Image (cartoon, rainbow, N blue to C red; front, top):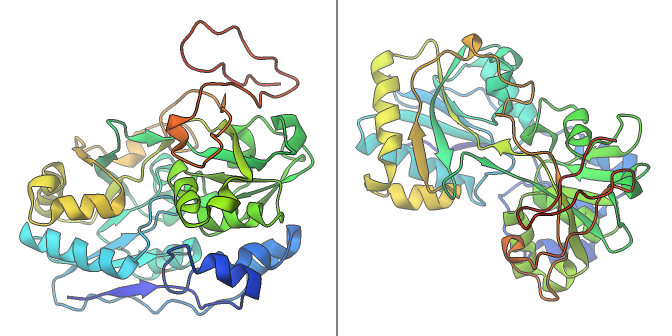
Length: 363
């Protein structure tokens, strides 16, 4: 069994940040410490600092299929355990794979081109790019499900001095760019109807980096999953109490399981069937819990290049909607009291009929 992780080198931290970062469970070699090192362009420069290139990946066993994983939003804390769990569960279904997880998109992209995998879990926008961004022809074999859906939303977190989307027009937003698109800031700005020449997007490797940068006042907002906010609330309640949810993004697709056009159809079918019944497989439920999913839905084979989805790679979903004020004590954002606020000044809220909060309309 092989466990090979493409992780960047550790970077130095300040004493103040180290105390907080130690409470947040992150993979060895994570870049979370960058959140307090600098602000604005300096923060982006630190994150873009050179790190050791990942070694070329070769299957440890003859005949083992390469299986890559890259998902900024749905990455377990311990990628070593994930590698072991995936290989063991798939082996129980007669699938011999050599699994590698990546923390940085640059490493993932490099290895895909140097040594293309037969299978991968990657952000949903890869499907919308027809695989061209990675130089592959891909087929979705299964989609993860969470609370009955194959999509999720990201929360735009701010501090109390930001009251509306318009307040961010000349501010900065920390975000994991490759969770919503191919690395362009426009994917983040468009989600909240911000002009491309207005707010500045500071790229970070993980949502926790964005949250910590916000909590230390290095940026004006952070775009994160609710799960990461909950983690911060558990590990550092005092920091979480300083933050609030301003708005939610449109729906983002959960990272599908892809198969390369070069993969054996028999193996593709075997993987599809195994994922559809993963909870029943030995240790399958534990693997699902590690990934944060409830299960997988098998996808009818259809080459990505024959589809014409939106440029973002996800199915159309509702536009960004205003959030509500967090409770005094940090908790699950889904349990927040419905008290709408944070609507863009240029777009007054629509009249509510008792259903979902009013949407933020385009300026």
